[in-house]
View (spheres, helix red, strand yellow):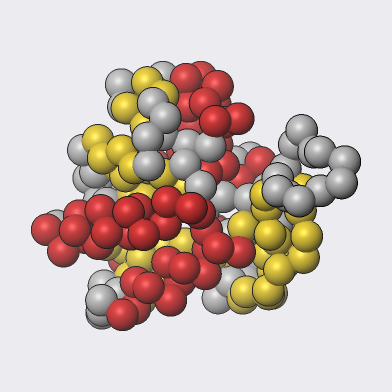
Length: 187
C-alpha cells in the first residue's frame, strides 16, 4: 500500500487532518502520521465562530480529537512515500522551524511526488522553499506567507500547479481530496 506522509503537531486542525486521514485509506493509501516526536497530539477546531456575541477578528481555537504520530520527523525517509498531505491549524506555525520536516518536505516535493496542502500548511511549504513560481491558494490570512515563498496567491477553492494541490480551508476538503487523489493515482 503506497504511503502518504502527514506531518502534524499540537493544534493541528481537526477537519484538515482527519478528513484525509480517513479518506486516503479508502482509496488504498496508508497515511503515516509524523510529528516532532512519535506521541499523541492534540487537534483543535480552528475557525472564526459565526455566532459569537462579541465578533472575533482572528481564529478561535477549541480542543478537538487526539491523533497519534507513529514516527518522528527525524526518522522520516522521503523515498518511502508516494506523496504528502500538509494540514493546517496552528501547528504549521511552529513545525516550520523543524529542519527534519523541512528536509523531508523538500525531498518529496522536488522528487515530483504529489503534495497537498490546506490552510496554514502553506507556512511549511514556504519555509521548505517549495513555492517559488507556483500559483497557490490558502486561507486569506496566509496569502502573505505564500507570496513570501515566491508564489502567486489566488483566492480559489483549489489550485493545482504541477505536483502541488492547495486549498483554502477545511470547507474545500472535498475538492482538495478529489484533486489530490487524481494526482496520486496518475503518479
